[in-house]
Length: 635
Image (cartoon, rainbow, N blue to C red; front, top):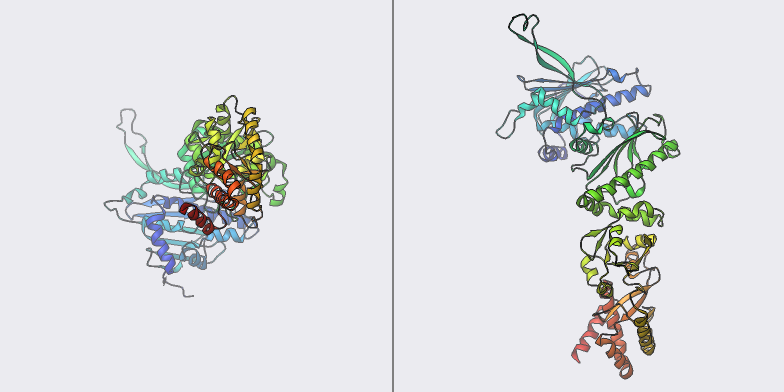
């Protein structure tokens, strides 16, 4: 490879990505400083890890620092670190290809680097410099290397790599700041005030000192006293701009919502503020600090097999695991955040963690904390809680279903359902509104509120003035079945056998009518050829002629859900076709049974198909159904 001023072009896809990144990925140009400082922190973490691994001389973190200098006249901003540095090949690979992240590759190659906090794992952060700089120059010397190299670029047109001079390992990045335009003031990125503000906002918790020489005015010695006119002289003071205290170790009183939100977006690569943050410090059987977040939207891969739950795990401020799944139950897998405990060893392995008693105590405490904070949100900010539940409520329901109801006590208070009263309700709220004589918590299942409201099975419950939970998620009915009851009130589907709504006199009357027409119902059952378990008179219908209900634990709606799954075709509900005794169709059926059994059989098929369509279920032979309707219409 030749040594001097070798000009290279970015790859076509890299050039396009660079253009897009500069113009659209980062809404705020000021983010560039955060990215470059994070890269510098990574470089020093890598050096520290390398020295701990026995490669090269021992390195102390106290000797590491990031230095910033700004020159208004030359319009340059320089960021310097004494980290691991880069070889020529690393400059080529890391800076010559967009999204080729050196930090990410380092992380993959060194799986046991849990104590190294690698920030820049996406490989585009460095290029944010081009949002404010017309030229970027990188001079770097690798730790243990003999030569230094310079990488220069003015953006999408390409870059050059050449030999350079540098005494010690580390990297120097020089940005030649753009000239001001009518719309943009680039001068501010050369002022100490703005630089200090950005570091405080974005990089205050970086563990290495970020230093800058700042000019101050001080009273000249011998002036300002004893009648001597005060005179001032300039003094250069090296200031450390960041606290180096992790945000989770700061007192809550020092932090605002903006601080928590900014840390979340930076740390967990989200562009939206979280719904909720939970900052807790616990001492006792387990001593730890936790900073947890409920995202406002689910990650793109949340419901895929590739999603990995877990919290970052720290020991005294040093990361020992990127994602510790044992800290979160599956039903709270949407929670992001970190836990820092002094009780855990830096050298602890993943296998040891799984059996670590302290970790189990911490996990139980975190679970309780998450539930309590969600309950508070539900009580104090209903709109925000409903937004949360719309996004992650399904996961909580699965938590009850998959545990066969064992997690009922922990999670049932968090559940919300749409309701016939309008809006959303908790189970506690529903029970508080139940009428004195109401025996059950009634629910109806369907693909949407509109479809549920049109179900004939809801008529009798509505007529009594009882509220109905609308179950529109596939898991809803399975979840309620596992819970069985809430506060002693059993759940009852509007399609269930006995809704507990009839008086004894009404039951006796319908029983007599059923017995008198039993030959008709046996005939209809036989003609449907095993499609239904029985045909009987309905006590729930008011206006509709027919409906489908079910007996046993598997409802019609549950059959639909299971049938849509692989190998779920065998799941069949024990269907019952119910006939409205107060509808004209009942008298017609009785008449046809006596006078024209073939026509009675056709009516039976039509009514069964109608009932299926009302339920949102497919009919076996749409053409036959249509032809029979037309034949009747033509009579």
